[in-house]
Image 1: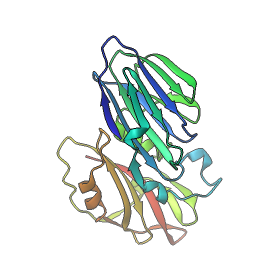
Image 2: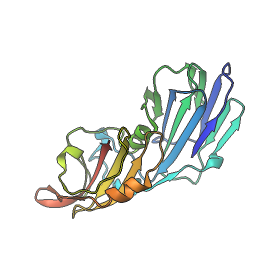
Image 3: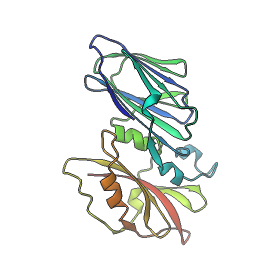
Image 4: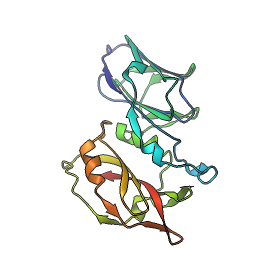
Length: 240
């Protein structure tokens, strides 16, 4: 889902999100003159450090991503309503840019979250309001990794770990063709042999970059070992 909505400068914008699940992530920020909404869905549950090891699960299914259906969004003047489809399974993220200086009335599952202008990015997930991400790509990655380790290793399930990019060794690289000054946020799923079997690459405005995904799948890594045994790895990196 990617949609722009024009609103009058003096209008308050009302954002209503209905049927949201506990793990879903909504981010709003103030940027530009129009409302811009980008959304997607992952299968599975997000990674959180406080729950690691308590209930084994795999992140590999979560790397199957799809945009949200356009008909889940309704626009009535300055009121924007997102209704989460009942049949939708997985983690939904919505990234909403509001007009600069606009008053925002934000309601999630009938609960009033905000009635004010937005000065800094805000997020809402798990019933809590927090600090939001500054780009759509960061929101898309954060939907998978609610907590990220700059330099660490965390178990997910038998034979699968979240691993900081710094801990991995690239054996073979292919040039990605990213234009100077551009950024890609990338999530990789790497198998026991060091092959990239899942790849998601997002531009800062939230578009998938299929060309970068295809090229980064050609990368090869040294197998990551835990107690001498090769394991599957999920990692995240920023490419410039």
